[in-house]
Length: 188
Picture 1: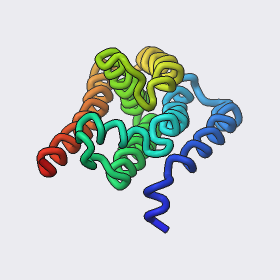
Picture 2: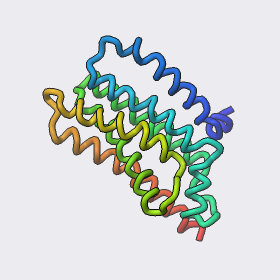
Picture 3: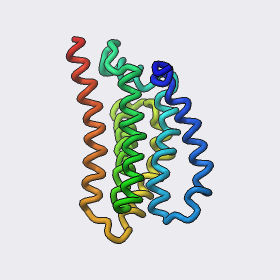
Picture 4: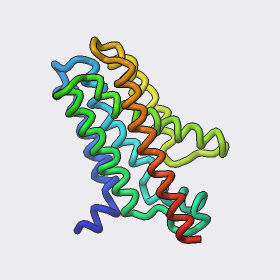
């Protein structure tokens, strides 16, 4: 059963993301805009993950480009990156935003924005589509930018919140790159 969850998490995630988006007007009806935007990072990311990971597209692209046909990114790695590394980080970001201070919601916001920039940067560099590019542009940029602006304007939110949010997002993405590069070296 766990192996099927690891292999097919993206389909449940996509449907759950759509459900969460549909419920957001009810759930967040009394929330401030800043908290709503922090919360929206998770379901928007879940929808993005469908474009990115349906039929193993992202792993296949990385394995072709970086692994040169060798498996440097497998289903288990993709699962760990996306469930604890995206859903878990967004969960913690939302809890921190509610329980400690709204500025900590910038962790999830910057995770979305850094991923968008990674997709856009790769597309510009390779002059080609990459799995996840469309939703990075259509969903991540507007929701992420709105989140950064609105949360950043809240009283008590300072540069430190932005620095921590950006640092966590960059560290997660750098960790993925480091993992793939180390795996490629081991397979060489």
